[in-house]
Length: 418
Image (cartoon, rainbow, N blue to C red; front, side):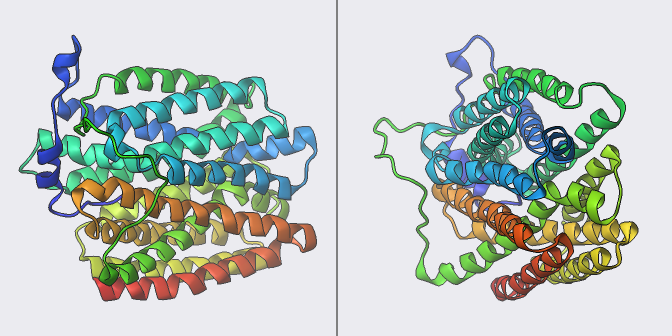
């Protein structure tokens, strides 16, 4: 998920851009390169959610309990967190294209592992690698899209780049479960065929990314390596903290739907359709992407108020839907909450980007994604531990209540910034 970068991005980018097409016999222009990076971003994010509706199939085949699903899912989030902390910010120095290409290559290795080693241990390793690739990609691709567009259309402003990065990020997360659910419902070998398709897709993406222009001038003397850190003026730390809590809470909702939605459908709502298990997370992520597009022209303040209302209504509906075992209420509430998460996270990214100078933007964006993916992993792990002791329904009710409690002060804090 991404958002509009602040208004000085074009100027800052222009100072740092170099056209490297002379280095090779062929190189995409910046305008075409923008769409290549967007397509690669979409493919990687879709691949990252392919296993969502397939967990029930792995579970039925190997007989492991529901809490193991949360461990497998959390392995992905841990990979993202580690990658964001260790390498997600390096595109500011090493180059955007290089980091995007590395991310796609890591996803190719993960796809191969899903094909040849798909017991519980193999799933954990493959999901961890997939998370590492996503962590290397998110901030790098977000900044690369903004800078490529700034060169191709310097008078355009940052709105389109921000919208496209939002759509491909969240839209990719939405497409993955839907594609895998359709494969599982209608085609043979559902634990193999989706990964074959994405292995080929990612290989094509890697070749295309290698031909995209670089947008960061590599320094002759590289600074010493250090893990991710955040350096903000004291007056900006309150705004960053509010944005960070909002990102954490929003991704906790996504974590619920990308890990446990199929289990909720099967165990609480008594629905066994693989297509439905893919459709529900698709609907949540699609609502997130659509809300950011539909309400993009509203003021930041209005978006924040709407996000908070949608989040609270959606979370309340989710709690009620599992208590009364209502499938329509579960789906509608998930869509409403997803729309709120989309606006909340978009605002969090906008606030974060506004705090950073152009040469530090990749680093600060990596920091907010790092915190968001902690929100993706930690609550789901706690849910997994709770499921060892308590039934699914009360655990989910407590989960949504905790997310609502976090969302309110975070939204109010960003409103003060707006």
